[in-house]
Length: 320
Ligand code: HEM
Ligand SMILES: *[C@@H]1O[C@H](CO)[C@@H](O)[C@H](O)[C@H]1NC(C)=O
Ligand SMILES: *[C@@H]1O[C@H](CO)[C@@H](O)[C@H](O)[C@H]1NC(C)=O
Image (cartoon, rainbow, N blue to C red):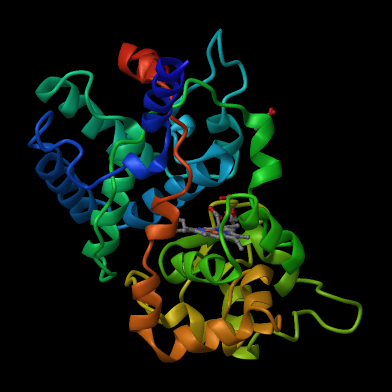
């Protein structure tokens, strides 16, 4: 009996996120940090959109079923409707996928079968945030990759720009994020860009009485109408998320939101809802407060602990 209990305890330890730690690979893959850092540096120098692309990819992976790299599984005989399919439709960046696959291949040559894709994307996101001006924070490692990926779960997990604040809060609460953490995480919209269709209803034919959403700063709305004028014919047209410092990871997003310079309806709501406005104001005034909450919370999102078989068998990259 005592033996059985001990055995169960032993089994349950690796399943707990408390086991994650920054030195997880120091013995089994000592070059892990260097390989990720070098690849991140090279890619970001050549393609400056990489940082935002990887950060968003990481977010989508984590919010769907924990940070388990399930987003990298391509549809195949065993997983006919992988998350990736839903996400590709939501225009995740191909450069972000490329970077993670490149690092994975290099690590498989250096220390085969050791490093999970979920740890690669976590570490790469941290390095990229730092490279574009954001905070540095230790990444706790030791996640395992999931074998499952289900596109049908994506719409239910992902927040969308037209949701109410109740819905947005609930989506994050489902992953154990508080309102404050949700606000900090959404500060990721300080980099990257958004396709016009995501906010077109705010700048064209908004209402019978107004072409544009009156909660938008009028000059900003005018600029966006200019940028997006042909978006129905050219769906690649897009605007910077943070018009003030589009490529720098800073707290400008929060100031924008309070001034009618938030691009998405959901960005506007963050500055308008009484539950989130005080937090937005705090981060707009104090960048360190925003940086301190860091991206720990995302990185700590529940990892799904399963052995790395599909990823290590390499099945999914032959399909990517
Ligand atoms: C209220 C919740 C959120 C909503 C409704 C939302 C929605 C969106 C939408 C619609 C886009 C534009 C996609 C495109 O046109 O290609 C976008 C971009 C982006 N989102 Fe969010 N998002 C939310 C929260 C987050 C969070 C928590 C993160 C990360 C921690 C994040 C990171 C990003 C990044 C980095 C981009 C730019 C991507 C790029 O330039 O490639 N978002 N978001
Ligand atoms: C993605 O878009 C394509 C083409 O519009 C569609 O056929 C497919 O069903 C979509 N996939 C998902 C998971 O929504
Ligand atoms: C609008 O976009 C379409 C698709 O890219 C392009 O063919 C067309 O020439 C554009 N219109 C003008 C006037 O540039």
